Amino acid sequence: MSPNGLRDFLQGAAPRSPTRAKLEHWLAGRGPVTRPPNIGQFIRLLNELSRDLSARQTMQMGRQVADLLVESYEARSLSVPPWVQNLRRHYEAHDKAAGDVA
Image 1 (cartoon, rainbow, N blue to C red):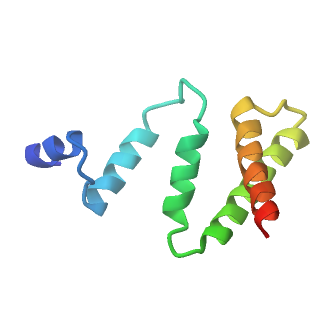
Image 2 (image 1 turned 120 degrees about the vertical axis):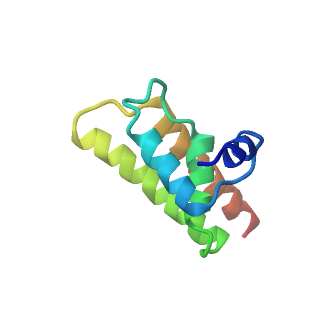
């Protein structure tokens, strides 16, 4: 990454896709995460990954991923982390709100 690219990135600019891939690879290799994921981060990532889908399809995918996480923890007899429980509640709340409108 060039000095100007780094400066722009630190000021909030989005890096070019090859640079972004390199930054993500570097970040992934930094070792274990020291704090639990934030559901806001997950939702933003899901929205980024599902740009070509409708809002309804994105919500359905989020709900399915949350359910899969819960099932995976339970299948291994592990307690479901709070962030996963919050994620599931987020998508359940959206389902209920959509049901009220329909």
